[in-house]
Length: 435
Ligand SMILES: [Fe+2]
Image (cartoon, rainbow, N blue to C red; front, side):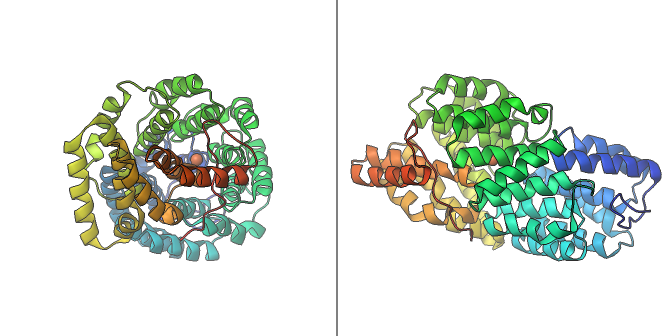
């Protein structure tokens, strides 16, 4: 049996193949519920190796501990089968990620795509890893390597274009990013990742009206999916930068917090509430409920970027107990000496101490810590737009601690990058180099 790209599949059935291909499509678009779509294929054909491996990918990429346990089970089921070369490489990369070897998993997927350039799942999981490890260059180059093998006639091409658009945006090539992302959404209006790549272009260039129009005129992304909250978050960023705090808060209460289910969604909630406060808004008791939502993840200690956003909620909600659990879990994480230990050491731990200091009103300490990490913050992942929170906080901290000249210097840097002045004084760093 072969998939629609002509690649050999171990252990599938015709019926299971249909569900598998549909789940892959939903995954590429980040629409629907690919986990539920795939479930019948796993039930009908438990020896369908790529179905098990896709299930593993969907769970491990959530970065949530309970889901990683499910990923391990699916990986074990796949490893009991006689896998072909491509399936073996998928299994190896999943195993590496489950074991905290994020960089090695990303490289294994490079090797896979060098042999199988049409494996869009490997490209997508590779780009997720590049994102989580802050590797801007590979966000772009992973796609450029395979681009000559693709064309609009190849099914799934929209996804490659959408991923390329995001890579081009994160490396500052905004014109090409915008064109690629817009073409991807023309080809597949449900492609929420391509939609998102274009939203990033407008974010980085401060093109707020176009950003708002883009999110309202192309609405396939709004239907469903894992990425709904994050795209609403991008729309709220555009409103916030225009000083439209009421619109941003309304989006927070409705589409963002109201739909938040996963760790990625909670990250967006924390990042938005923090920005709203920096913009001078009273967010009332919203941190309390958000801290409760983060509580089950407090002691996860498996990804520094998640920990930071949880810690921000705990600090603002006054949940010292949860902050203690989080710090203890990070101390244990450091003993594992895996890639997350590096994320924690380089950026995660000092970033938490900076934000906790800021929340406690120790703005001089926050300023000092943020200055040490801002230029290496890419090493714990996320996008330029997400990490911009550190710069925004630095400006506020510097100003509040009497360091007006530093606040002004960082503000000026941002104005020069953007070429115009936003409210509240925001902007974007030129492109930060990845690790
Ligand atoms: Fe984003």
